[in-house]
Amino acid sequence: MYHSRICPWLLAVLLLVSCSGPATYVRIEGFAQGGTYHVISAPLRGVSETELRARIDTLLNEIDFTLSGYNKGSLLSRINAGEDPPLNDLFVDCFTRSKEIWAESDGAFDPSAAPLFDLWGFGFANKGTVTQAAIDSILAFVGMDLLTLETRDDGVHLVKADPRIKLNFNAIAQGFSADTVAGLLESLGSTDYLVDIGREILCKGKNASGGLWRIGLDRPEDGNMEEGKNLQAVIEVSGKGIVTSGNYRKFYVEDGQKYAHTIDPATGRPVTHNLLSATVIADDSTTADAYATWLMVIGTEHARELLAARDDIEALLVFDQDGQMQTFQTKNVNSFIP
Image 1 (tube, helix red, strand yellow):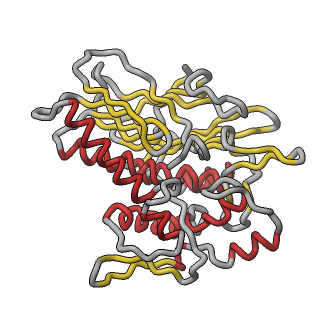
Image 2 (cartoon, helix red, strand yellow):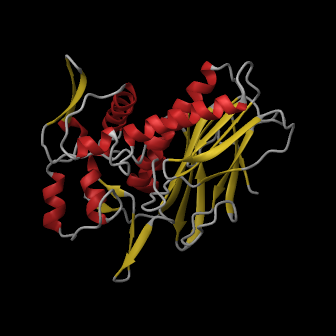
């Protein structure tokens, strides 16, 4: 997901666990999309670390000017402001995948719920006055089926069935970014790498020690703001995207009531179930990112039902059971307690 330090969503709470090993692996770190990124790769033939860093930064900057709602000059911001610019391939690809997952999830994952995020203070605008009437008025123009792509002489355009429709790709953009950077690495010949964009991760091959990549999952307790200090589990993985979504860092309390940043597009309200975090492992980080949000929207019981019916995704759920933190994981998750 995409976030800003000023207005962070912090859905993904994964922590990269450093692996000791030969220093021959290239390690590049920087700032992007309101947070940090980390790229670790086996040496690339004919590509210096300086050149690789420049290419990664250029690509991430292009994504920022396409999908960021905090960048007021981005394609997304211009569209949300009512403009009708031609779209680039990055926007089209992210939008298309978002609409696919919206349909798969029966609307549980819905970037067009952006006005609801804004209303509750978790979007790109200041919190509004929340009333049932305000929620109902917004729900009238929420739904990815109200958006289509149209090819014109100057390129592809986004067509809105209602001009009030806005998009927020926070629940998919950083996973999409990780996949896009990974594609760059693969085009340069890398087969052993880890890409971490704001804790949305895609890793393949082996780490510098010759083993699987190790990803630490923070314990989803309210107030656990320091990544890596208190881990719930460590997952060993390769050839997959891995993303965690949770409600313990991005929330506020008002009149004694906790309001979490995960909004259910069906009700227009923050979720109130007992699922604390959902870590999803999928073939790509884009899917893992969006599915982690999907699971957080539907809650523990429905998440377990979904996972039982799917053999293409794995997950580790942390939930509250009578005041005690419990976990559930699918059979192919390779995890251990740190």
